[in-house]
Image (cartoon, rainbow, N blue to C red; front, side, top):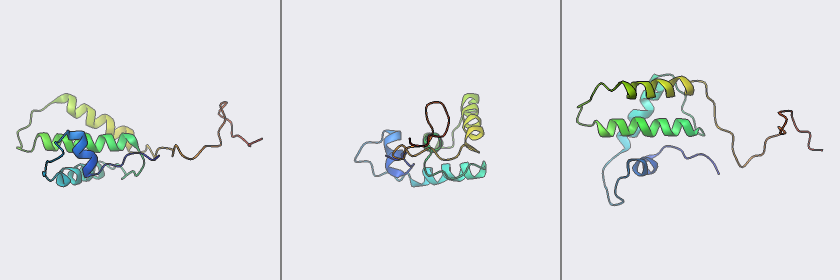
Length: 111
């Protein structure tokens, strides 16, 4: 099973939109990914933190779509924290593929 990639369906679920909603959420998702690229965060394909960050940024844009914002310091701290962690985070390991590292942290030779 691979990580959930941020897409319109997952964003709709994250926003808890009703199933019959026809609201276009694609622009919020695109804006969030653009903001991440602008912060030098790679477009990860398998990173749960990245997916959560993209959903949170898209939700922030969705919630503030009227351009009425409050200068909320906690939001800025959350964005800065994600940005710092994700710049060099790398992809998550694929849980379907076993690694060759034993419990002791040494490479397992399979014997």
